[in-house]
Structure formats: C-alpha cells, structure tokens
Length: 353
Image (cartoon, rainbow, N blue to C red; front, side, top):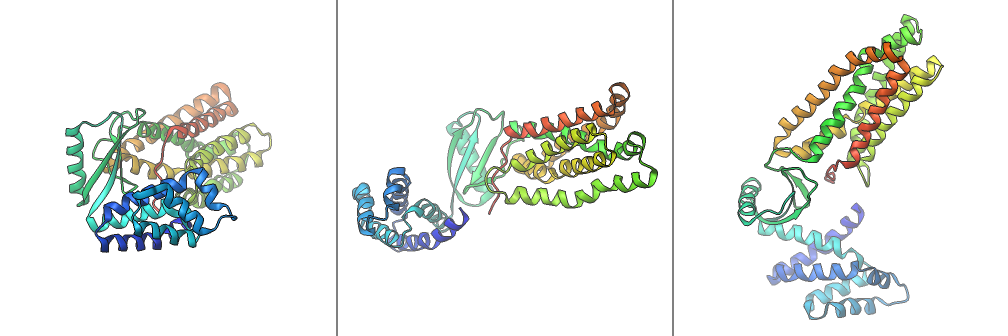
C-alpha cells in the first residue's frame, strides 16, 4: 500500500499543477474521483490487467465510460496513465490530489463519526471548533455509528483528530476494563513470583533470585517490541495485544500445571514478558480514543490498572490457600484470556505512516 502511494504521488502532483494552471480544481476533483471509481470496478480492473488489450483501447474504454464528464485534459491524463500501466493507481492519485488541493486552498476534509446524526446547529458549532483548532477551512462529513456510547471520533485528512468531547466511547470502557485485568495478572508476578518459586516450586534462595529476575530481563525486550509491532504491523493492529494477553494466559496455564519446576519458572517468565508487552498498545490506543482529554482518560485507565493491582496481591494468596496455587494461577490465566477477548471490540486507529 505504501509503495502504491509513493508511485501515485508524482502523477497526482502533475494533475494538481495542471488543474491549478487551468483554475479547475473542482472539475479535476470530480473527474479524478469518477475515473478512480471506474477502474475500481472489478470488471474494469480485469480489463486493465488483460495483456491482450492495447493501452490505447484500455484508455479509450475508460474515457468512453466517463463520457463528457472528463474534459480533454483529463482524457489525456487517462491515456498517459494507461501508457505507463498506472491506471489502477487512480484511487491513490485522486487521494493525493485532494491533499495537494486542500493545502493550497487551506481546507481539510473532516469525517465525524457519532452515535447519532448531528443536526445543523451541532455541525456548525463543531466545524467552527475544528476550524479554530486546525486553522483551516473545514469540509465536514458526518457518519453514524450506533455502537458509540457517547462523544465522537473525528478524522481530519484521513487521520484521527483530537475530539473535543469526553472519552465516553465503548472503546474507552473496554480499554479500561482490559487494562484492569492485564494489571491483575501482571501484579501477581510483581508480588508473588519469587515466593511462588521458593515456597511452591522449592527453589533455593539463590535459584529463586536467579529465575525471579528472568521475567524482568525478558520484559526489557518485550515492552518496546510490543509497542514497535503495534506501530508497524500491517493489517489489524489488535493482533499484537490479543496475542500478548492470550499468550500470557497460555504460558501461565502451562506453568501452573506442569510438574517440572524449571519449566514452570520459564513459562511464568515468558507469561510476564508477554503481559507487559501490551503496555504500548494500551497507552497508544487510549491517547487516540481520549483525544484532547487524554490526560483524564489515561488517568482513569491507570486507576483501573491500580485497582487490578490492589486486588491481585490480596486475592491471589487467599485463592491459593483455599483452592491451591495451580487453580489460583488458572484464574489469572482465564482473566488474561478475557482481557485479550475484549480487544476484539476495541478499534485502535490506524498509525500515521
């Protein structure tokens, strides 16, 4: 995707400069959008890829479908793209063109996603607020997502913009709940891992200290790696926190069940590293979801984590005394799995490339 955008950019700039000189920005916007829609049709895409058709026939076909909605300059642009086998880049070219146009006209396309449709007064007030914040004229579009519990998601120029409302969305609540469960699991290792190794797995003091430090050595790598992967992974970014939390639960379950002390210690060490590897994804998503209230949102999420941290060290020994250490750790493994599952309904924003 990044490579297509890079290739499309020079063609978009050429179209923009032509439209600027002709003072026909709006006409070229409409024409490029139409041509992009035409080549995006699967039937037309198949024709463009057909090696038996000449580039002239392909260009004539696209221009013919568009009819008189493309002026002579646009039709010639289609022929140039066809000659260079770049017709299928028209969606990216059109997107780049709009960015160039917005820069020179000092405008920005803003998408507002809200739980209910905004009325005229609300739209005008919000557009004025965004205009003041971005110092640009706003072309605003409102779409409705009934799954939002409140507030709004605002995207300016295809990127998330800080929403002026409070962080009340479903994402905010699910993030806080998931982070509370993640902290419950993590604090078990902070307070009880060493004693578990010595009292339950019968490690001597020296071996207990050695293996007790292993989770934190692994976390030196896992925490920044989790954040880096969350920024870089193609496709669904939720795979990183889901894999980290679910993997932690799996290692806890294996370590709690095995009869081999060394295997148990190693499994628990990897469980710690994995549960801590999701810190970056949690905080990056919370910052994007909360927008201008990221301080308050982050504070609430951290409070949820602290609640998990209060419950975990107090409840774990009680569970261990009543149902045994294996079952107590299985509870934490199940909570890690629930924390991972909650991410299936969380929608982290796409990273800026």
